[in-house]
Image: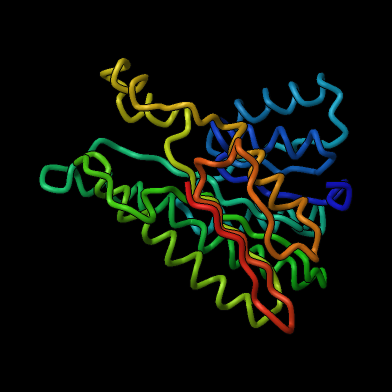
Length: 266
């Protein structure tokens, strides 16, 4: 990770859960991390925690409504003005509502769709930022889900699964477009990870949220991100360490001569 010290990473949905853990880990490795979310106070508290821990990087809180395209554009403009742009963009933000397909509210579906498909807008803005800085080793990492690859047999997940399949398609589409520019994109698709996600989804039934989770933690996903970023340019295929065995981890590396990939299925 030495080559990323002092460089700028944007982490969306950085206020809690996977996003907060990723942001903290990247700060620990010396990166300048712009953490964005609607809950600015939580990221500010996390920034103080990172500073008090003596991490070599810095966490910069930034408020952004990721369902609003203008907010996303304004955020990237602010990053450009303050830090010249981004080197790494990690699209993590998302939310879910308990809204089955046959009885759910359209407004709830729309809010889920607007937030989670922000990765397309963010990827476009990040790519433009990297091009302006003549960065050809920048990384765009989309945090997807195992729901983007299989349909989970539960009514509360069906619309979320549709969104995750959209994220899978967007990731593949962006990957193919970026291939022409000889650059990188990674997609990490974990199974159920213990965060606040299920507790918000099952806010009226806390025990159900507790029973949802297995042993996969947010730090495991953060470690997967660090693994992707730290892999040297010459690496084409290598084993995934045991802590990541429950991940569906796709790693794409593009050069002018070849396309190589690493795939580990849990």
